[in-house]
Each structure stands twice: as C-alpha cells, then as structure tokens.
Length: 303
Image (cartoon, rainbow, N blue to C red; front, side, top):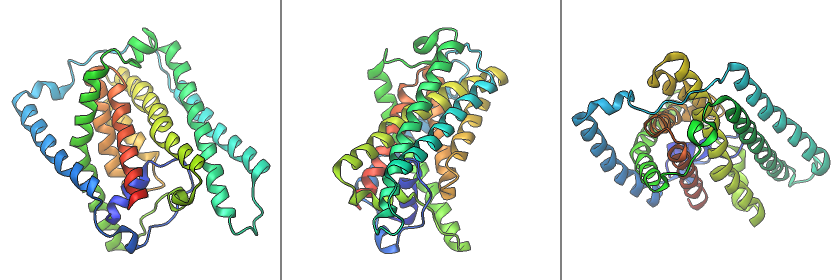
C-alpha cells in the first residue's frame, strides 16, 4: 500500500487526534483489493465520460428534483454546535471516569479507545440534530423532502456502487499527487492515531470502530453536508452546481487533520453531491461514503 493510499485510508476514520505518517515499510505496494477496484473503476469512469459526452444535458443537473426547505445558517451552526459540544462533553466524561494513569504504558491506547467512543456519541448527536432540523425545515419532511428514503433502493444501490467505482481512481490519483508533493517539500503525511492502534484492539473496540466509520459517519455526514447544507446552498444560489461545490468544499475542510487528503475528499464529495442532485435521495451518497470508508479501513487493517 503506497503512502498515498495509507493517507486515503486514514482520511475518514473515526474522530481522533491526528498522528503521523506510517513507516515506509508499512506502506510498500498497493493492496490487491484496491488495485482491482481502481482497475474496474477506470473502466466505469471511461464509460461514464463517454455517456455524458453523448448526453451532456444530464451534467447540468437542471433536471434534478427540487427540495423545498427553510434551512437557515443558524440551523447549520446549531447542528455543528451540538456535534462539537457533545464530542467535548463525551470525551471529558469518559476521561474522567475511565482515564488511565499517565504513567501506564497502555495510556495512549486507552485514550484512543475513549476517543472512538466519544466520536460515536458525537456522530449520533450530529445525526439526530440533523434529522430534527430537516424534519421542521423541509416542506415534505424527511422522506420526500430531505430524501432519506429507500423507495428505489435497488436502483440507488447500483448507482452508488458504480459512482464509487468511478470516483475511486480519481481519489487515488489525487492522493498520489499530494503525497508526492508533500514528500518533495518535506511535509509528513498525517493519519489518525486510531489507525495505529486498531489492529491491537479487542474485538468489541474493533466493532465500535467499524460501526463509527462505516455506519455513523456516512449517515451523519451525508444528512448534514448533502441533505441540509447542500440543499440550503441550492436554494440560495438557485443552481445545483454551486451548491454541490460549496458543500464539497466544506466537507473537505472538515478533514483538515489530513491535509494531503483534502483534494481527494473534495472529489469524493462532488461525486456524492452529484448523485444526490440526480436522484433527490440520500441513499446513493450514503452508500458511496460507507463503501469508501469500509474499503479503506479494510485495506489499512490487512496491509
């Protein structure tokens, strides 16, 4: 697994303090699964480009379903405040109750586990706060308004899978470029500390890490970034692409702890925002996000 792919795998791990770059020995060679997915993804991406060149009207997103809402910046700030405050409160409470003795050799590992638990709590609060705001600000509620619906789950599953495959080569390429740039200027690639410890975790902590990364993070982040923030921007700008790009920029900025991953995460977010605008439903973006996180976590832990 190359340095770039190590960075990509770390980009969307559960919330934890940023650590440092893994050793070169840990990142030698590309994982076979990721290599295969990138190869398939290049084919899917090529087909998508050809189809969009033949039918360019769909790229404009003007035919996408509307989402009438009354989301205000104060709603957005309130959701973020609930998330950040709950994270701080949960981490403080957990450290107070279960915090290790600083002299304990396993103190760092315990702190990382508590950070995972606090991250799961804050993600849950983030999701609940987002759903409450959406329920009262979207004219047609959560299902028809926000698009939190499984009404066409088979179509959305196929669409989300193909979209993940198509955007993966772009994400990998951007990571390769950014890590090469960081290496050239002598900047260390940062990854989450949690990934340095996850392989030594007991089964229950590994399970919580997977739950946080593959379920809670995609649900909470897609409801907020795509469902709420992108919908608000679309109402303001009266155009889908400014909304997609604005929400994608904020999504990427939230991962500033891994600066080398920002361009690839921006590209991923554009793909998720595009599919949200095409369908008006969150199923495909959530699936793209979940598969991206799951594959990266698997690649990291099996490399």
